[in-house]
Length: 141
Image 1 (tube, helix red, strand yellow):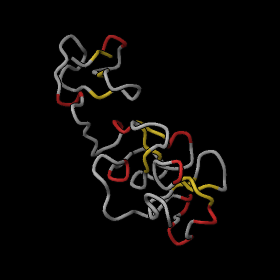
Image 2 (cartoon, helix red, strand yellow):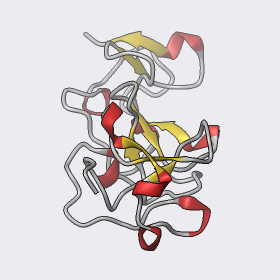
Image 3 (tube, rainbow, N blue to C red):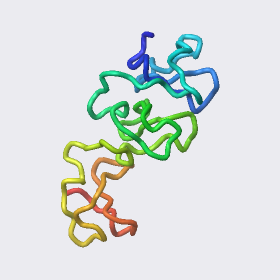
Image 4 (cartoon, one colour):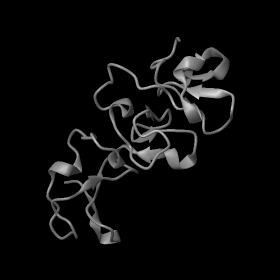
């Protein structure tokens, strides 16, 4: 209660006493403020209703501890937090349902390994990744 997504909390990856319930610093709360009924096995949150478009809560992030119970990172706008392991912090572009406005997915990048299959860089807003070679990391233009 009192957080951005009270029914969409995950365990903090930094300690065993904190819940992460959104992308604001105020959403990092002591577990004593979280309702036990909302927590599933592994501390991942119950699925929430009314998921916001563009938010990690509306995405599915395969390969994470809780693929359908993700929150936005409090540190940047490109990362989803889907559990309490470091491997549960993944780029939004790795999650299904993600469509970045003005993103690389709608662009064609000639001279790359996969010119029509580009993704946004997980590191910045001006780079497209169109294959597994360093030459496939190209500026958006």
